[in-house]
Image (cartoon, rainbow, N blue to C red; front, side, top):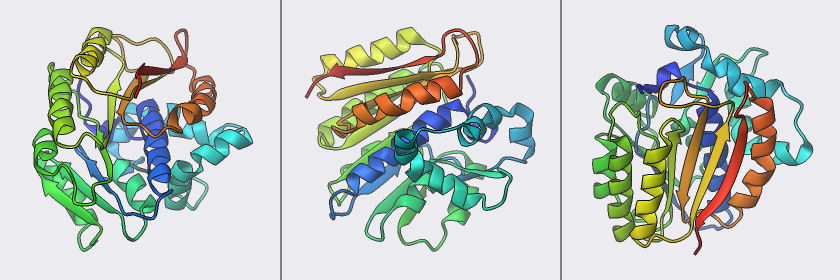
Length: 282
């Protein structure tokens, strides 16, 4: 699967990833102490929904566009407002023209004391990313492989924060790389929060990753899934998952409010639904 993000901005995968990211940031800001976010595969930060890439796939029309158009219960609206507020701020008119990637979602939600480290390996994407945040003292952009970044920049000096991991899944052993990187990082920083995003196309690889986490002694592991339909190795992506290590205690209940509504709104066929599973307790 090739997942260069310019082709997929605002899709059903971003809906899950950014709803969760925003809730994580809100939780960290319950305390005054500063925190840092490391985004290991940052992309370019902001995406033009009128570009050739996004017009080629149109995936945002089945993701963020449906979310914004739907009638939203008050409880869900309150939980999604941190993320959707960023989207609305970037689109002040009636049309949805740009979509924030994870870096921009995070940047617009940070307090003055919080920090953001963005790593990106693709040369062209890194230049775009670096230019976008040039001069921003709260953001550090680094041209580096995300897996190496986890070995180099953890733990952060703030000692609080989270690592967002959402690789491109361009190579067949991406789940192995992700598992190894998290296990190594966890040894250095067992108190950090790790948020791993992935497409739901290889169930065996996902199960293996979860089994490896349990065998290694990780604690407090939460798994989330959101499907618009059934997808597999030979189909287009209709669902994605996130595994969280050291997730806030509030997150599972928040997702049990958010995900049923999202699954209904984003429904595209048989297999649509969601799961919230505590894989490993504290």
